[in-house]
Length: 145
View 1 (cartoon, rainbow, N blue to C red):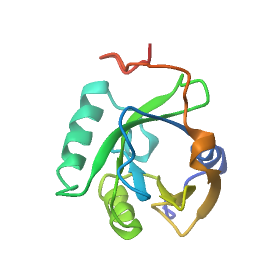
View 2: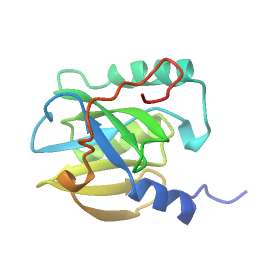
View 3: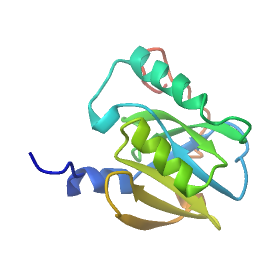
């Protein structure tokens, strides 16, 4: 069996991600990371929530804030974290929690970094990827309303 790779369609979906921040950003440089749906295999809301609770334990004293990451209309959404950790630690946590990729924000620019190979794409300015359409909440079923 060959080495696991993220297919181009999935990578493009990641590159089209938008964010909803409910609190101030943790600093000028941070990662956006989740433990939801390892290797893009859909899990139950409760399993994803448990995975994210385990991920949070690795943040130690680093500043962090919750963030929702989703497609342009937030039909697909994952609970995530914006956490002020270095890129290397973010990639290592992504690998530990079997994520295909993480986002890294540096100088207000968003980068998409693969956790399975050396792929990295610059996605543009963070402010163009922040949803400001009003307050939304994630229900217990994992849907926004």
